[in-house]
Length: 355
Image 1: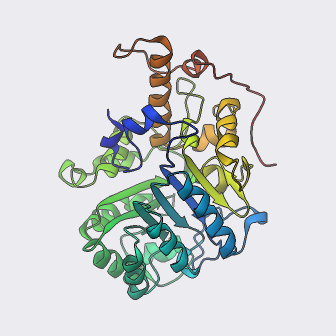
Image 2: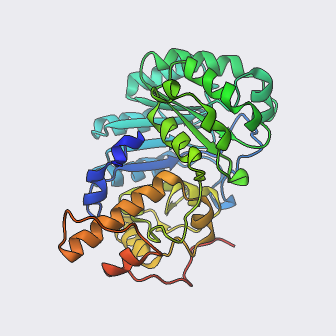
């Protein structure tokens, strides 16, 4: 399977082949605020030290460093990022040549807010919709009556730009998942990202019942459902998978004054790699070499299927390059030995977990 076939535009075989501490930044995510107007019960929030709004000067400095390193795709998230003054950051990204400027939003802002962001350069909205009806939506967002407005925004924006619907499933809404996904698809988004909440880390087996004609419209959804049909959970690293996070070489999540291995590690309370500054790439390259993802409970339990597939492919390519056997069929990674074969030493006792 080519990584391009999964449907995430930031992932490709070419990126896996060329990833290094000097390759362009393929995806960076900035948490600009932890403020939110909803109270979703499954939301982890962020660490105490990074709560509140990121000072605008800090956010601009982060973007400056990323753009200087060839930033291709950026995502602004929170909290709810539309509660933050995004305009100067969007302008900076557009003027800096960033190809994709994405916003992760709960969809509750007025349509005029989203239109203004589009005019400035935003060309990707990921909008949360955890239910196919008002009652389920209110249960999932903490009791706010906003479903109709969110639905209208998804329908309108999907006609104008790239929109994905994010659907989180827990015990509270999994019974209605088929109907909810069908409804989300009827709104016209480019794709649908289904995921279990971290507290509900299991295979989304019920989604296997979705019809193939619906899946053909949405490649990311199709990828997840095909995994579900094979009883593969969305989250988790197995012992046979790569134990290195090559993704962190040209991918970054920033909150407060720190950069983190990834957005999931950040949200699950993991420790940062280091502080924001010109040496971040070198720090991340060292972290990749030293860190054992399988020995890290956060990574082992929560790493997403798409990230696991990317890291496995990176590992295979590195072994191929090291062994000088390009083009040969190699066994899939087992126990991180492919990373070890190209000089990456696993240190099972070194984990980056916040207490």
